[in-house]
Image (cartoon, rainbow, N blue to C red; front, side, top):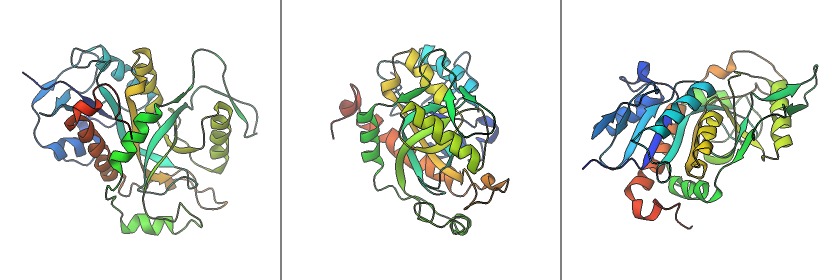
Length: 293
């Protein structure tokens, strides 16, 4: 009897970088080493590899459209039970220097849609576009709390390049060592960088009353929408490791800074795996919802 799928880990980067362990999905494949079975899902670009304790790993493809379509396919498949399976997005992201540093790992407590917005002229005030369903989600607080408890004490990697990069900034937490944080994740298909755009993001997050944003990424809102449509949003987690700052130091506005990767891929895997294994290996405590703290 095969193990039930208890946690579905979804990365963005798929099989093109899986075999050598260099990308998001590759870390999980190499880390687990052996899988009990592989499940092909119609409509999804990557099969689900399932361990003998019920952790499945796969890749949705990059961007909100691919994430939403792939997550929907997984939710419709026989491999997943929306009432019991947990969904965990694990990957890299940009980080606000006011919320973390390169190498830090952020557990999202809110997900905001960056794509659905109105902008006027050259101002920094941004509003939602006003149509359709919600464009910001608050994730289940008890689930995020329990995941944070599970991840506490994970040893995060740091690198000389990352330390040298953060030394260009002037204040905490940007200049601090990597840590596990929590905050709002802003997700959209727009790759952006710079002080002016960061102010626009602040404006949109503030409009939604979604706290203070920490990370900027692509896939989270798409996967969250799919989970919401299947009444599984209360079982969705987002774990993002900071690969770069979302703006240059002080008042500079240099392009290209965001390409620094640092230890982000490895730290996203380290934290994500501890959470996934905690859920799957202690299923009696997690099956009906996160354990009380």
